Image (cartoon, rainbow, N blue to C red; front, side):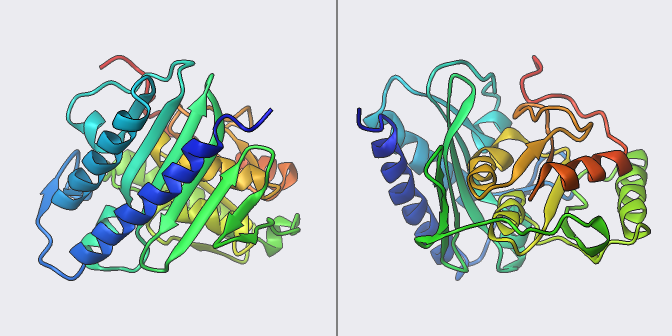
Length: 278
């Protein structure tokens, strides 16, 4: 039987390219910025424009499918994951980067059926890198097969994470103390490029050995999650238990060994789940 979702995936790649063109065009112009949940949580007209373009295009082609989009959730739509084929979209992952023209900005499209990730597309548009993965078929960047690194010794690991947009003193304290714990093991280093999707794709390429973060959302992880697993990596909860797309927390690593070792070090921050009733 032919792959039922391949056509959807091809369409997602087309839409991600189109979105990337809108973003790269907008980077040349004045960017109007609005603030969302905190002074560090930003949104632009381009975020909204890109999301509208992607969702209306998919709705037209696949009217029975469901959607979770970052900006529509911000505008009050729910984010409940059902068994229905669901497109999970982050129109601009790395909005703060986009606003500053820091060159890591991605369009992320994840596709989930029966709550399982089927394919993911992440287009890092300034770099012109198209990351794609289909469950059971491997992960690729611009057509080149990806594989995670083989490094299992945490003292030789390069880890990616973010400081996040939440500026509450207690949250910041935990985020910084988690970094301090890892750096004092010691590990080789911590990097942050400002977009969860690209951070995860860097683990898939072997450029970083692991990534962890709390406080992000399903639309930050749905596209790149399957790219990591198809490149041979693993996804875990911060606690070391099974990964849950709606939990707002993740460890994505090249191996179970490294993921569990990171889980032992970091303290979790209680964020409200994406699917908690508002």
